[in-house]
Length: 368
Image 1: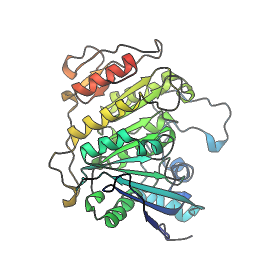
Image 2: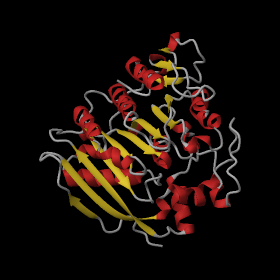
Image 3: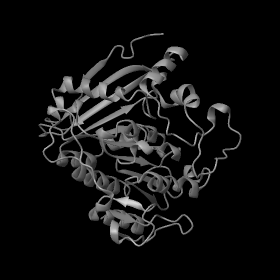
């Protein structure tokens, strides 16, 4: 078995859209043992108890044993368990993983990093002009990775931190090694955006799962105190596997059982991919969680940033979208103490401004 997990590295400085922007790319050959699929097959099955939650077993026809959908993704796999499995099973073939960094002109010190799995819409999000404008406004860097060993989730968690450290050295922005993170994953990219903060919640100020391919990737009690947003498409075929009711129960279940600081939204008349009207809700969530959780005087050049904790009682609650009613819905929102519905399972909304945007999104399909 090859011992070096980081073979030859190709670093290239790309032409920036603006003269002062920073853009760097890096390409690595990484073994498939890093991928969440390999971990599921070779580590998770023998180290996790079977699903014992309130949700029913899925029926996906007659899948092969390798395709059975695991309902409990709360795996609790240590780096040591992963390393032992690699030693026993061998690391598998290597594939290319590409990493991209963008920092806006005029940002001397990044206050945080938006990290995106390039799976699905993550690649286009990295290049969006409105995403980059928001990054410039908030003094954020953007970071993306694409390639099967990582884009659907990966082990160990240190793999991302090693790359951020490498980019820190190349760019001279030493804050990149310790800056707080906001995570985005689309479809099975949720295997990154939801699973990662369950292992290192102290480094993540918020995360988004966009149209999860396997909703139970979201079942992450370890990430309960990290604000999370899950966005479903009403007509997404993945939402109906096995039923809309079962998939939409995941966030309320985590809210009830673990007081999760999470909310979900359903975008009517849309499928598996986000559209132009989807992004303003993502950006609103990013903006308001950043303001709440990242201290204004934080300087990651001095080391890891201690994120603010946001008490649930200081936020708002929103009535969850009903699959029985479907379509656009006017959903009541109110401060936590004044909310008249079931507090334990309602969507948790970080403040009044985000609550208004979330409500408008569910009522009108758009955030003004």
